[in-house]
Image (cartoon, rainbow, N blue to C red; front, side, top):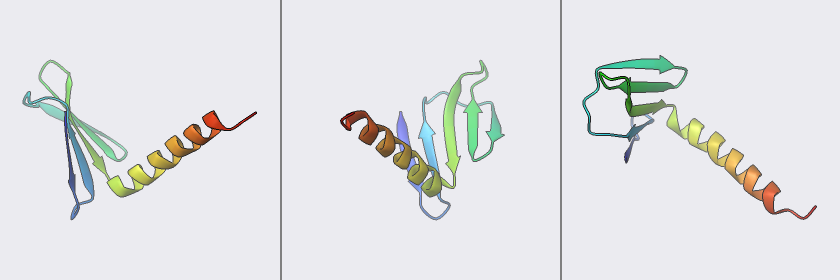
Length: 70
């Protein structure tokens, strides 16, 4: 797996495999590229800074609630 952030475009690219991709599908801020045998090989996260802020907030909340005394 390889991660690369393109600051000027605000895109996070996650390369899962070096396999060439055949086609892509977009769902919201995500573009998933698939190989010819329908396996995901690359994921692009558009508006990456917003996604990372929201994701880190969720993980922080879960971690905090997990370790708080009941």
